Image (tube, rainbow, N blue to C red; front, side, top):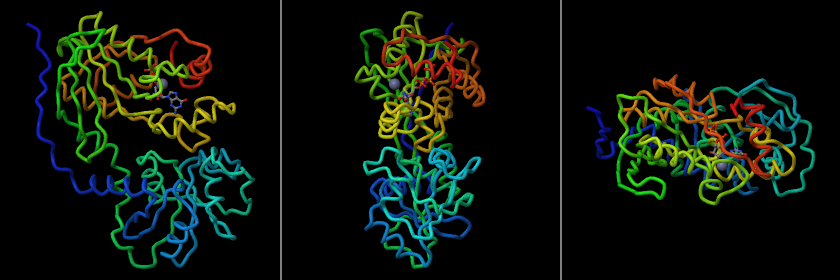
Length: 371
Ligand SMILES: Nc1nc2c(ncn2[C@@H]2O[C@H](COP(=O)(O)OP(=O)(O)OP(=O)(O)O)[C@@H](O)[C@H]2O)c(=O)[nH]1
Ligand SMILES: [Zn+2]
């Protein structure tokens, strides 16, 4: 007798305090507000570089006896041709103090201002845990990974959100672990009639991921499975810059033809950098960078995704062994690390077009994708 997936929906668990604090900090940062980050009792006031204007920079500077420090990733520093750091986050000091325009040039290769040469008289230091958590927060907020901080020497501004470094650095993992199914509905698709969509919500109030369950997968067998990272442009608009639309519809068709399986629709737009940053990466690609170098120019790693959310969803669905449809060996390795047995990698290749040939070639030659 075959078993069927048994998903019990539960009321949403109350979020632990650190998850709430980080979620609030993300929202504040996205609104261009100052957030306080505390590490071992030391507090800094933080603004996302993207949100810096003369006015907000002056508000930040007024909170401290020492001038603002710009934080950039080692990737962005290298892209700017400034003396390097192997990895991690750099603290930049300027004897002439930073103005908003300089910060924009430093943070954003797509800045709408005349891209002058950034002043060369910076001092660069390696940042620690606190600085890394500041950049991690900007990334969680799907902003550019660049920030401005001051050590807090005045009292904390009214209503400021205060968050611990450690809570920021643990956030992605804590959020993934908190994912649980909150809604389920039957949604017949043109390629597959017997389909259920199950929404998984994290307890921090963040974005949901979806499991698209096709047919009745038997959890005692290796389940045919696709992990699909959200791509607004490819999935919804049929963009020719990538292969995502074909891969999404192709996976649904192949799973339906095989009888059953699961597609996880993961909220990881732009390999985890968010839609706005992906559009910036496209602008850089039109200026000659490939898909990986465009990420690095923006200060990101080439791929910012983690697969704990996917493993957690599979676990909640009672699926522990899969046949994974992917060309990306890193996905196979990541799922295995998180305790899912990948019995087989099933290639998931579609024809290229004039617009995505370079993109696919880069994936094959530089990202280890197997075509
Ligand atoms: N940052 C960035 N993301 C992109 C770009 N083009 C597509 N994406 C995103 O990449 C994700 C899809 O990942 P891919 O690298 O195409 O493929 P994969 O998921 O690693 O591997 P497969 O399982 O073989 O498809 C989606 O989230 C897209 O939004 C780009 O130029 N820059
Ligand atoms: Zn895409």
